Length: 119
Image (cartoon, rainbow, N blue to C red; front, side, top):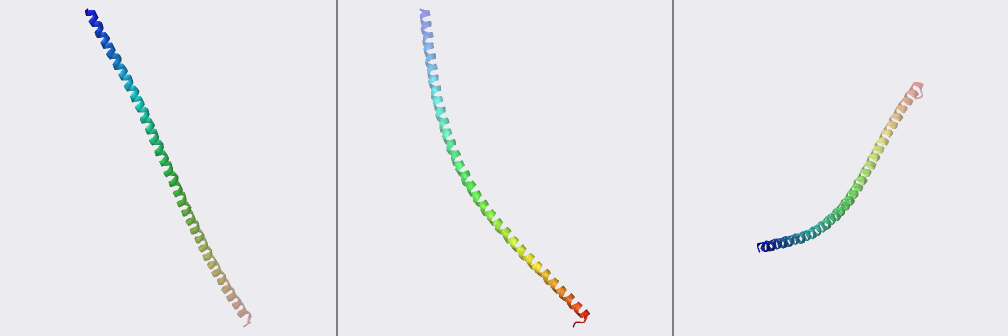
């Protein structure tokens, strides 16, 4: 009889162990499913964030390109004005030098005429 009771206890203990193992497996399965769901949700959030970031990058790139075009246009206009101003100053300077040469030639011509007695 004692053997019988002991056998029944071992059977009960074995059943409880099997039941616990089944619960553990079921729990692990639920956790695995939950982890998969969490991973999918995280993946979706990451994709949405990446898409938003890409939109912002494209927008910022477009704005930077527009601003660069504006700066480049202003710089070209500035250079054109500086070149124009330099050309005008050069023309003024060249005209001044030509006028000086004409005056000096006139003075030389007048001096030569005076020397030659052609007054």
